[in-house]
Structure formats: structure tokens, C-alpha cells
Length: 235
Length: 129
Ligand code: SF4
Ligand code: FES
Image (cartoon, rainbow over all chains, first blue to last red; front, top):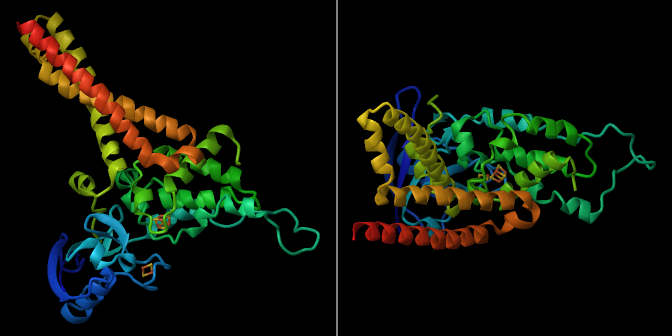
């Protein structure tokens, strides 16, 4: 089938502002949007720039706006979006070139969540693992699935208003460690979350939950963080 | 590097789903109330000064078309706010059902708003006859 793809283009060395260019390519309905982008880059215009790595929904490189919604290009089939496709960069982060955005503010916010296990207590008597029951593991299972694609954060109206807001992805990371029974850093992280740019900026638009390619219930995770801050209880 | 590429129009064009629509309507309702209260206070003040502009604004406020539009904003803000509060209080149990909660919210809103619209119209007709 013939696919018409309209792509946002911006070259910082030439363009003052972004514009759109339209290409027509032959593709199969079971191809992914990423395949179509590869066809354009390979056969129509080699200057087209976009991020991709695994091509299988694992690395989180290729989040973009496809027909107006954040998705991973490698997980989006042509048959699901139709033969007329518009592809734009995710919003709220500066565009470096074409579909590539500057991810630094996103990762700066991520780092503020102290994304590592904090536990200075001595190891258990056998000197090996800090054991955890299946129930304790299940408590934060969903938030371990995040691939840091930024589809959630860049679909959030609060983040569009200000990239000072830590954003849903950072809050999912905080949830992943705060509810881990082996971790002792909950108080530090809750303190960070209680700042102006923390959970208070979530106004439950649910765009993040709708955009997440890993089906993480992000607004629920943020709600649990808000509750933990109000009650002081992590359960 | 370009700017952060977020304008009001690009934000409004983002294809969020039903929850995003409630988010936008909630803000519109809030803005309507803020504008109403501010201009209402100013209109009352100018009316007390004997300036005609106050009368004009207050005449608009008591007109049925204005009230029908305004009630949409106020009632939606109220009912949506209650839905958000209830879900926020029980995140683990209720947030997974946010879509169903929004459906219930719309049903309640349509009933309450429909009643308010019918009452406003019948009252206006009663006044005219
Ligand atoms: S929570 Fe989902 S949408 Fe957000 S960064 Fe992680 S995987 Fe991507
Ligand atoms: S290319 Fe790795 S997630 Fe799409």
C-alpha cells in the first residue's frame, strides 16, 4: 500500500523554524512507523534524523508524536494509524534536529529521584541477598517496567507548562524505589517530591497513562506517592 | 536548537483521550468562574458609582443564554472536581477504574446540567409571558 507520511523537519544550521515535508512510500500494513521512517531515510532523504536503537520497544529511543499522540515508532503498526501519517517530535523538550529532542532536562529530573537502591544497613547474616517476598516484589513491579522513553512526561500539560516539573517518568522512578522493601531512601525521595515541582504539579490529566507504551498505570503510581506523602505511610 | 515547541494550540491539538478532555474543560470552568467573580465585583462597584458599564455587565449576567453557558463551566468544574478528589483519596483501589469513573461523571453531569438548563429556560419563558 502507498503510505503518505508528513514529517516535522528542522535543521538548526539552516532553518529558523520547523516545517513539514511529505513523502510517499510503499509499505505493508503490518510494517511499523519506524520502518516507514527508515524507508524515507534510506530512499528519499538521507538527512532525516531520528533516534532508534532496539526497534523492539525495549530501549525507549523512538518516542514521537504520531498522528497527534505520543507513541513508540517501533511499536506502532501502519494498520493501526492508517496510510496518512503525521510524525512530529515529542513536546516540551527542545528540538535538536528533525525528530530528535534534547533529553537532558528529562534525565536531569530523573536523576533528582535518586534512581538507585539506598540501603546502608549491613548485609544479612549470610552476606548475600536482601530477600523479598513475592508480595513485596509485586508492590512495585509495574514501575520497574519503565524504559525511560519520555512518552509520558512529554504528553503531560504540566510539563509543557514548565520543564522544572519532574514529570511522570521521574515520579514512576521514585515509586519504583520508595515501595521497594529493600530500600531505605524513601524519606529523602519523599522530601524531593514534596517540593514545588514534585507531585503537586500532577493534575491528573491521564495523558501519561494513555501514552505509556509499557502500560504502566502512571497516574495510579503518582496517586500512591501523594498518599504516602500525606499519611507518611508506605504500604 | 529550537524552543520547547509547546504553544497553546499545539497543546490543545494533542490527542489525549477522554480524561484530557475533562482536564481541559475543568480549566475552562475554573477560568470562567475567576473571570465572572472579578467582573461581577467590578460591575457592582461601577454600578454603585452610577456608571452605566456596571448595568450592562450585570444585564449580561442575568440573561438566560449567559447563565446556560456559565452553568456548564461551574457544574462541570464542581462534578469533575469531586471525581478527582474521590479518586485521589483511594488511588490504589479506584484510579485503575478512572475511565468508568469519568463515564459516571458525564452521566451525572448531563442529568444535573440538563435539569439546570430546563429550569433556566422555563423560568425565562415564564417571565416573558
Ligand atoms: S513510564 Fe512509560 S511512558 Fe513514561 S518513560 Fe516509562 S515507559 Fe515511557
Ligand atoms: S527503538 Fe528501542 S524502543 Fe523503539
